[in-house]
Amino acid sequence: MKERSCSSAVLIILAALWSVSAQADWALNMTEGVTEVSRSIYSLHMQIFWICVVIAIAVFSVMFWSIIHHRKSVGAKAEQFHENTTVELIWTIVPVLILVAMAVPATTTLIEMYDTSDSDVDIQVTGYQWKWQYQYLGEDLSFFSNLSTNPDEINNKVEKNKNYLLEVDEPLVVPIGKKIRFLVTSNDVIHSWWVPAFAVKRDAIPGFINESWTRIDEVGTYRGQCAELCGKDHGFMPIVVQAVTDEDYALWLTEKKASIAAEVAAAARVWSLEELMVRGEQVYQKNCAACHQVGGQGISPMFPALKASAIATQAEQRDAHIKIVLEGRAGTAMQAYGAQLSAVELAAVITYERNAWGNDTGDIITPQSIQSMLKSK
Amino acid sequence: MNIWKVFKAVFSAFIGVQSEKNRLEDFQANSPIPFILVGILMVLIFIFSLVYLVNFMVYLM
Ligand SMILES: [Cu+2]
Image 1 (cartoon, protein in one colour):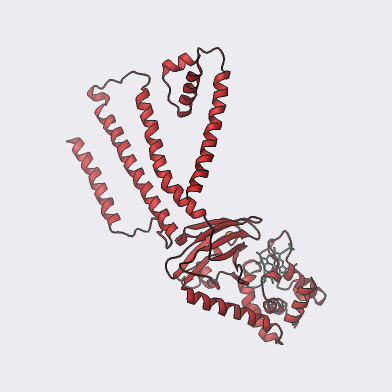
Image 2 (cartoon, rainbow over the protein chains, first blue to last red; image 1 turned 120 degrees about the vertical axis):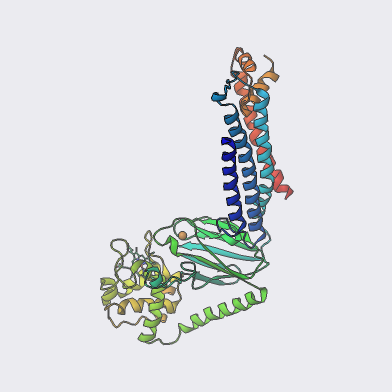
């Protein structure tokens, strides 16, 4: 009687679990993804999961059966023997066979994952504190991808949107159905480039290039994150990949290159203080505010204030100011922006720093002067 | 002590299954040196067969 109620309780629990899982999307599982590799990883995961379930049920059934049927209260006597080589061999060989059976498909997938040969598109991915740079090799195209989430959402002033902290200004755009090779590296600390839908996660290590690849089946927007703790804004350097058709990709390439060319051309014209301030504020929010803060007050003692600072207000420090923005400071979080921003952006952001937050120097830094400083280096 | 028995003893140690009778017999040996040498040899064989297996798999794919 007792035994019956016990096993029926177990049955009820199992049935409950089953009906919940039958109601589908618990969203506890990993994603199946949109590539052949991601799907084979998913199916490996499920196969091995079910093997584990079967083993667990078998082992625990035998164990509980033994405990219950050979209990002391019904007069069971412990067997006193030392060894049983046959049984020991069986419990050694059977797991080995199971492991080998799992290793065969796992190895096949792993070899597939590491085979970066014969790629159609090569993209170098570089991690920065805290953004990603994408360089299309052989295309003369390179840009940075920054978090674009509204700071008010981050500071709980307004409702968070559904892609909160998973949105960027310039997504990586790639064609579907093509083998895309990623060469992943870092400019400063270790990051990790991770897009679950492609089952791609590669560490970005300064001085090393790690390779990975994907071939995306479906048009869509896929999101990921930095997966290696990399400092203050580790959670604020997401990855957004837009997979598009071949034609759209070609179109995007042309447009993107044209807009970069337009940016270069814009350096030649005359910019007014107002124009530079508007542009400079955008550049500052995107590239500098993470450390020096929106109000320019910095975070003492890590990130110096620019508001009312000597370097951003004194006339004789003007060149030093331009220099540190262009060249950064080795060994600190201050990067060399000369290699990251266009001449217009650099001129705008430095002008902005010298005039915002009551710095009011009235200085105009022209894109031409930035260009000549970059050249003279 | 014949060499076949040494191999058997080392192999048993590798997989972790040995009968008490054989174990006692092994410990009758005069010197541990053959066991150590065979042990090192078999470790090398194990490592190189893994290396070979991996290379072979990569070659197959
Ligand atoms: Cu990172």
